[in-house]
Image (cartoon, rainbow, N blue to C red):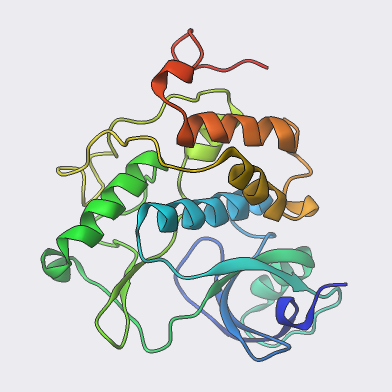
Length: 245
């Protein structure tokens, strides 16, 4: 059975933005998370994309909130939102994704971006390029400023790296799309120092109901992720980065 700190007790508020119907949820131990539902948006693969994206971005040096799978009990009662949202909740019973709620944070506008620290921007540009993040435009950069004035990057669910890897393409992107607010300063990302055992541990974090439609085994996925994130270009397949098992 899930531990109390992993089990959702209340859904307190539904946020208006976000294709994955994010909401503010509380666990049985009183911890607050932004809850992203498996029954909305990109499903289990989308949740795993976001969890991996957050983990890798943190490894590169981007300040991101903590995240973990959270368990939504079956027959969860209606507590917030519309009938449509409740239908998503009922489709999501089981394991979902919780992202630590940053209290009193404000979302940055495009006019605020120039004031962000250079080291934060450099790390974010590197992470988003490596993760193939296609959803960080100036109009909605998905950056929060906490009560102490520190920036946090959020929303890695639109990254394409996992879809590329599952399709067999292990070549790292060289630049983010032109719509990315850091497109003019991003460079081709270098491999990151990450142990293959750590990659396997990251893959094991994903609950089974996130990955039941995975076209490859967990072991094969970990192998591909290890090549994509940590190996030199010499380790890529000789056919231009397209991997076939």
